[in-house]
Length: 373
Image 1 (cartoon, rainbow, N blue to C red):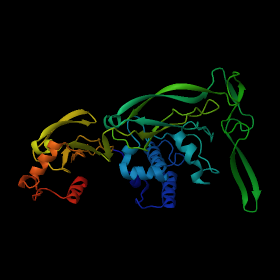
Image 2 (cartoon, helix red, strand yellow; image 1 turned 180 degrees about the vertical axis):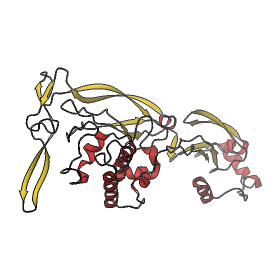
Image 3 (cartoon, rainbow, N blue to C red; image 1 turned 60 degrees about the vertical axis):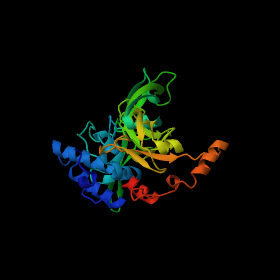
Image 4 (tube, one colour; image 1 turned 120 degrees about the horizontal axis):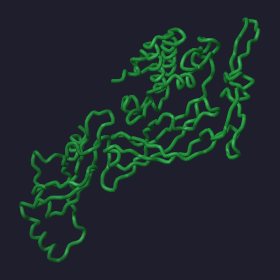
């Protein structure tokens, strides 16, 4: 089981953005690979702290984590987690200020080679529409994605301006002493490589837009608006030596023709006639796993709610499965034939047709209270 993000950073759930950033900086400096060379445990803690900060520093991700926990970002290869060292260095390097050699991370770890900057390709975003059945059961989607990749036949050479480092270091004498600053190399854009040759159909960075089929495993219980991540399926990094960006998948839930979702529970409106309510009947209704037949007892009142246990949507947090609530509505005909009118006129004074609710016949407000309990 994964550690709680708040526990990793040593903060409360009410921590402000500034407190979250401060706590991450403290942990990252404590476990930084430059301070703990060859220490596998420190490396793991360094990654965990970065993973926690990536989620908690983003208001949208933090809200989803607070509601759904780790399952909001995981399942079938997705995650807010699984960050590698390249992710951390490229995303959070500036948070350390001058703690490690002029604003960057030191060398000798994760292939950074003496402070060489690793470039990450840009992320791609797509929207995937899912039916309620797909959400309830989980699904694997094969999606065609257009992503930039280094074109075949493209070759690179080491940038002469930054000597392959991706950044240019300058030392200035000021009244406060010698100040060292590092800026992204303007010649290569931070890749450390310049194009030697490229095919005519490639762009100025030697990239080509290609179409690729990506398999996306979507776990059961996702909600509309949730964003999942497929690592390494975004655009490749220019220069041929960086890491590919990520594919961000936004979930869009399509409306169901008969079922309404409310969290993990589902609602179904069932309409029956006067005679069916009085005599009893059986009805076939939709569920997310197929049709089922339910029994309507004689004397069923309009507004009665039948609860079908575990016929709803599985919880994204593995807390079980919701229920299907069937709302029984007795349909009142809007027009009657002469014979029908005579029948109801004769029954008007009949004791069996006069409202006589019993104690077990709950009021509307009691039914609503039971529905949400």
